[in-house]
Length: 385
Ligand SMILES: Cc1ncc(COP(=O)(O)O)c(C=O)c1O
Image (cartoon, rainbow, N blue to C red; front, side, top):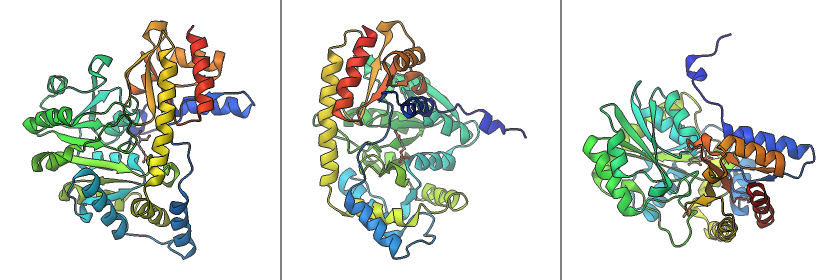
C-alpha cells in the first residue's frame, strides 16, 4: 500500500525518538537522566481530578457539543478577559484535544494550498509539519542569540512575500524560553497589520514565567490586531494535565465557526469528563499553579547557576516555560552527534536542536527533580570538559 504524499512529506519527531532511546536504556536498568521531557513532572492537582472523577461516576460520558461544553467555553472567555484583556464571546472559543490540536485546527481553518507561513527558528518541533499537513509552505525565519532568539520587525519584513498568510508567535517560547515584551509584540503587530498577515499566537506557557516577566497577548493590542489573530492556549502546562488532551483556540467569529465545523467532522468533542476537569482548573483555586511555578523557578535558578559553571556552553537567559536552549558551538559538535554521544558516554538525554531548526543547540528541560538537575548537569560538564 502506498503512503500519501501528505504523510510522506512529514519528518518524524526527533524529540520522541530521543525520548524512546532514553526510555529503552532505562528499561534495561541503565541510570539515565532525562532532560528531554516537554511536560510537567507534577501530578494533576487533586481538585481537578476529583471533578472529572465525580462527573465520570455520575455518567457524564456522552458526546458533548463538538466545540466543548458551554460552561467551559464561558469560563475560558472569562479567563481570557481577566488575565489577558481579551474580549471573546464563548462562541468564539473552540475547545480542542490539546493545544497541539488547537494549532493544527487553526492552521487548517485559514490556510490554502501554497500559503506561506513564517516560523521563527528555533521553533516548536510540530509547527512546520502542521503547516505542511494543512497544505501550507513553512518559511523558516532564523533568529540568533543576538536578538535573544526573537523575531524582529526587520526579519519579519525581510521574509514576507506576497504569499505570506500567517506568522506563528510563541511566547513564552519552546525551546528557548524567551518572552516577547509588549513593545516587541506591538512592533511585530505593526508589520502584520501592514500586510494583513494572520498571527497564530501560541500562549501555552503563559503562566510559567520568572524574574517578574509579564506575559502579553498580542490580540489585546487593538481591534485590528484582534481580527488577524488566533489565540491558542491550554491546560497541559499550567495544570500538569498533558494526558488529558485539552486546549483551545479563540478566534474571530467566522474562523471559530470553521474550526468547529472541521472538528465536528474529525475528532468531535474533547473527552466529556476531561472538560469538567478543565472547568475545575479554571474555576478552582489557582495556588496549585503558583506552587508549581515556584518549584520551577527554584530549579531554573539552579540550572542557570550550574550552566554558568560550564565554560563551553552559552545560553540566552530564558524568562518562561521550563527549557533552556544550550549553544554547543564551542564544542565543535553538531546537535545530533552531541546528543548521541552524551547519551552514550554520560547517560544524559537532551533534545538535539536540529529538531527545532538550530543544529548548534540542544534543549534541556528542567521539568525534573533538583537531584536530576544536579547530577545531570555535572555529567554534562564532565562530557564537554
Ligand atoms: C509551544 C507548544 N505549543 C503547544 C503545545 C501542545 O500542548 P498540548 O499538550 O496542550 O497539546 C506544546 C507542547 O509541548 C508546546 O510546547
